[in-house]
Length: 145
Ligand code: HEC
Image 1 (cartoon, rainbow, N blue to C red):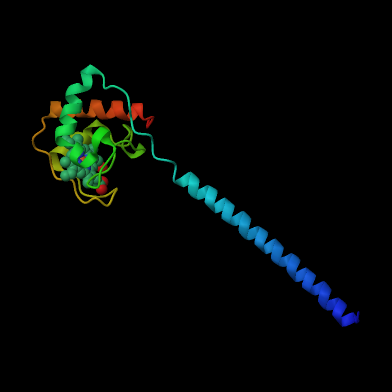
Image 2 (image 1 turned 180 degrees about the vertical axis):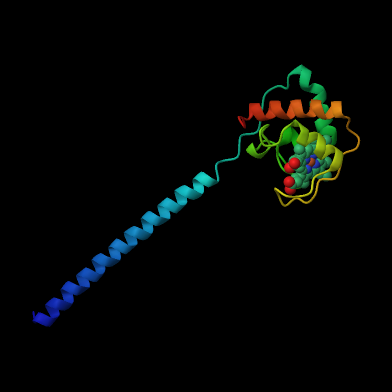
């Protein structure tokens, strides 16, 4: 084998080793990114199941009559509004007053892409209190907080 061929073969081997290293780095990078993406997109909480306690039945009925068209059965969301089974709406982030304000004044779209929420004038302050108790129960059932 001529010396130049030998040098060529060695340098090719080096290039290939370098490529393997690069590939390995790319693969490690991809794995790290995939894990990071999986962490960011934590699976949505499971829908709350289980029988609604009797003292929340009125809150459930009011919620179904006035809120569920957008916020969904058992507050799981629809194409018109967000789910409340979501850490965004746990009590420290959206306290009970936020629900009264939302019903009174409506909500300008800011967290989502569903558009604005119109005011819901048919519910009294007491009604909203019962609706919130029902939503908090659902959130707890689903492990939101
Ligand atoms: C016509 C559809 C619709 C109905 C009916 C509706 N909502 Fe909403 N609601 C929305 C949408 C859309 C948003 C999300 C706005 C955003 O943040 O992008 C929202 C957001 C909210 C929020 C979050 C407010 C905030 O400060 O971010 C609360 C609380 C709320 N709704 C409560 C209720 C309650 C209680 C009812 C029933 C009395 C109700 N909604 C009925 C569409 C609706």
